[in-house]
Length: 138
Image (tube, rainbow, N blue to C red; front, top):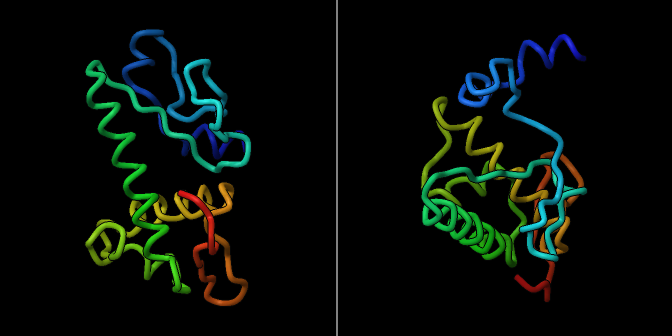
């Protein structure tokens, strides 16, 4: 796999210019000292690092992610939905050739994260469906 990773993993162009060497945009997820105590990284498939020169941009993105996680939990409450069915409820847009990869990837990451938190569960079968865990706190 090292060859595929070398070819396909994105490169952080800004960091690469600064270091004058190739710096991958993806790295192993680690906890930072500034992370809240309840932060769970070890079981997540994706950890997002918000970078900006403006603190308000970072806080805005954190709030947006929290809002989408809550919206997703509500959409799953009393329902059994496929990730494809979740996308328009979460983003307001139907899947298209231009957005499907991005919106489904984000939706799957949110679903996995809710599962780790005990707020959602997979329902086995084809297609895979998801539902909210009754009584789970947000």
